[in-house]
Length: 382
Ligand code: KG4
Ligand code: ZN
Image 1: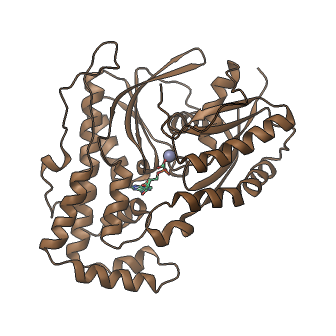
Image 2: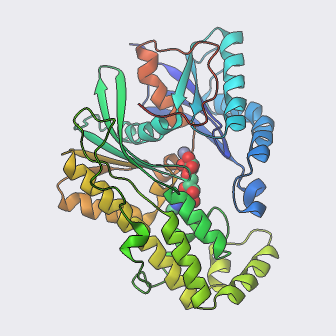
Image 3: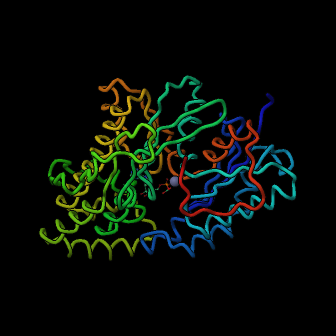
């Protein structure tokens, strides 16, 4: 089989991204235009602004991905685009552009589930390193701003399929990082900031009760599973409320208001600026929050891995960039005799290389999209 160069396009949330990947294993170009600056003043993604920014960025971002790769519109073999899940208006920008390109250039069009993209980011990373061996069964934790999902992944020839065995009942893990950072006026997005500040605090200072991170339906059977296996669901709205209560009982409101005002005066605050605006109580709270989140994610994922007797763990999505999370999963997986793989940090957060990589097996099996498919904001992965 000759090499296939796939142009991937991703616009599901607040990153306009395009990439060219060769045969699912080599990133030839990878362009990510982040809208962080646009959404920062609001402390979260504003859907209407996201669509507008995607419209502005899509043409130059795709053009740059092709130029960086030494490719042209005509020379790529297929166009892959995220169909969902995500913000409907944002998804539509990428989908409309991809359809227009595929139609005008007479190229195959491939529709990709964003969550499958995150899973294939791990496979892309391993193939880049020359690791082509993969032991099944594989359990993948996709942990991002919108998702905390556990999937058993299977491959038959060029066809991948997924079975969901757990998800969050309320907030996603990344959403909890973002909301806690917003509550403490640390900045946006919260995950990377909390990651960096946590090393300066005592992770054992604040105890979060297990009921705040409760496994509400641990013994519930999995109705979607043919074997009726157990589900491993998550819940992260309780810990956010617990942080809020801690703020109230420890009189942190005044220092939070001061930090908010001080950061608002800085055009581009750095980690050290934020650090200098945090007292010990706040740093301890942040480090303890991160520890509780990471330990809960690892405990439930490892319990699911044992229950389903898997050989390999994938941990992917924006939160998989977290240093403490990587260390904890590595230790826990080693003691359980499991292999654990992560994407590199740039491939953990949203990007289009993962979309182009996920499209390669579909390209090989000629699993192409028709021109009438549309965005699916709540698209499930199967
Ligand atoms: O995968 P992603 O880029 O977009 C979604 O599909 O949601 O994930 C973004 C999420 C945000 O909630 C962000 O705060 C979180 O990932 N995140 C992190 C880190 N880097 C990004 N969370 C914890 N630690 C990090 N280092
Ligand atoms: Zn994502």
